[in-house]
Structure formats: structure tokens, C-alpha cells
Length: 96
Image (cartoon, rainbow, N blue to C red; front, side):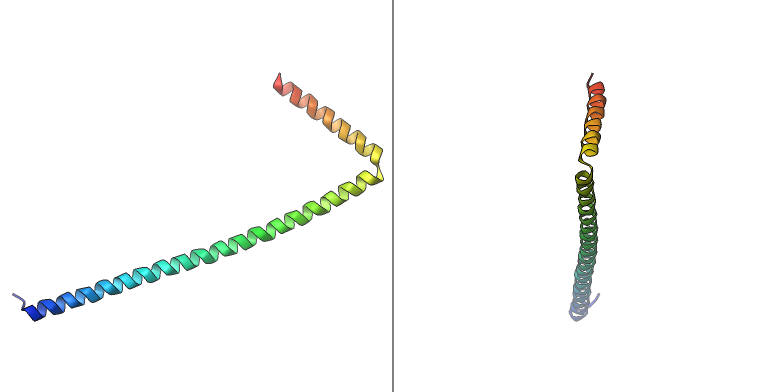
């Protein structure tokens, strides 16, 4: 049967091991959190960059459309009328 001192030493060793395990788990959790945060920031930056690209592209396209309308207003009205008529015809058939 182990003596009191041996039992106390074994208990202290187990306590130290438990503390080490706890510190390792906390460190691992922090590492995972930091890695996830970094990846989220990278993804957010990528999305912002793509959004800026799409916004710039849309602005350019809108500018080109406006200049075409100003160059040929009668043709633009005819195209818009035809598109509206076609949309009305197609949507009217679906509703029936």
C-alpha cells in the first residue's frame, strides 16, 4: 500500500498533468479561433474587392447605355417599347 507521501506525489503529478492538458486545450482553442478569424478577414476582403469590381463594371455599363440613348434616342425608345410589349405579352400568357 502506498504511503501518504507517495499518494500526495502521485496526486500532484496528476494535477500538473491536468493543468498542462487544460493549458494545451486553451492554446489550441485560441489558435483555431485566430486561424478562423484570419480566414474570415481574407474572405471578407475578397468579397469587398469583387463587389468593388462589379460596382465599377456596372457604372461603366450604365455610362455606355446612357451615351447610346443620347446618341440615338428614337431607336432607344423603339427598343424599350418593343421590349415592354414582349414582356407584357409573355407575362400576360403566364397569368392566364
